[in-house]
Amino acid sequence: ETGVTQTPRHLVMGMTNKKSLKCEQHLGHNAMYWYKQSAKKPLELMFVYSLEERVENNSVPSRFSPECPNSSHLFLHLHTLQPEDSALYLCASSQVWRGPWATSTDTQYFGPGTRLTVL
Amino acid sequence: EDQVTQSPEALRLQEGESSSLNCSYTVSGLRGLFWYRQDPGKGPEFLFTLYSAGEEKEKERLKATLTKKESFLHITAPKPEDSATYLCAVQAGRGSTLGRLYFGRGTQLTVWP
Image 1: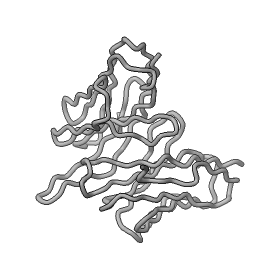
Image 2: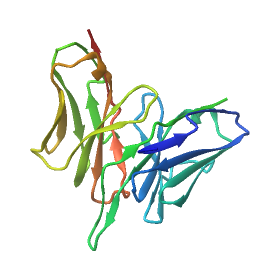
Image 3: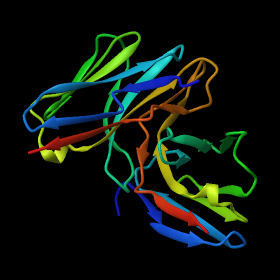
Image 4: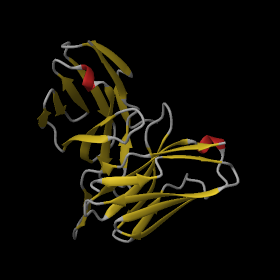
């Protein structure tokens, strides 16, 4: 496997189900991201894990729960979702450098996405 | 309020008809501007990163340029396989969440034979 992989590629779930999305990066990066892409809207950053620090978008509902056990794997746990949560969920990774005066990041590389449909 | 605006929203070109896509941004302390290509149902594919005004990068029929307020993606003699949505994203420096990219809504390009 190369680059960033995501499983499953497609997921259909009911509003009462619990499911998880998985992302794995093979690029040796130290930061991983979850994005949501809805029709006609810009990509929306949901969560960032970098150098063991988690940063989240405050507008993300608690029914989305991320987990990052190590720098290569990222999960998004889903429970009691709503139909408006149907979207393409994208994972990305990049390299982050923390210096004495600033932190900088390199290009983000994306996975193929998981198409989620909530019935 | 969108911090990244892409125009046009959609563009139809005949094969061989050159054109440009625009990305204007309002973030302060730009750290980088990124162009991606996205095919339907797939993740964005990285094309270019530009860091400072005046910088230019080329790849096959694509050329990206950057000024202090906007970026252009020039497509020379496009082919049908260039049909995709082209996304622009910027990374701000000051007061921005680590690694956060602000994306535009994209330009959907269709090239017909």
